[in-house]
Length: 265
Image (cartoon, rainbow, N blue to C red; front, side, top):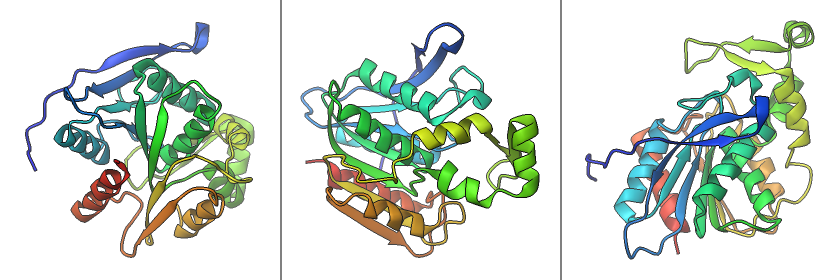
């Protein structure tokens, strides 16, 4: 595996209008000439960005294969504009769809990590309405669909509920950053409008889920619940017995690469 990768300069796309307008940063690797492969679309998790280790490895894989790769930072993340506290699933979904429609790949594979898995499933639902590229596969890493409703709300402490009511947000210590996680009332309320674990999800493509069994953030039972809502699709669920939420170890990255290559037909 080569350590040398061509350097990409970020491009920016304005999404939204008026006070809701924000500049969304993208890193776009074009496909090599005479290469007929689906584009790899990376969707990051909550508070993660397109320069994270898994995102970079997906870009590296794309370069090795000659495929296009499209990464973006949601508003309030990484190089993009906008305030993080304005972020909601609807807002970040709008940005992901705008980037996909702007770059306009003919075929694509969505790769979503944690919250990015939720965004990926919503992207699939929206594209199924027509007017988008052909979705050939989805790879989900520790997917967290409906995490606001299923994983946050049921476990809110009295102090956190009071903070949501009084301040419109609450803070939670992060094990990945010295800065606390911030969850807003807008994020939680909007999350209810974007739930996918309420009925059958039909993506029309194969799905491979990678899930650590020692994931303290998204329990592996959540991945099993997701599979129950995907009865119409070809779904492969891979449990990693000693894997945590990040799944960023060399052996985890190799599993991710293998999963993505398995989607390319």
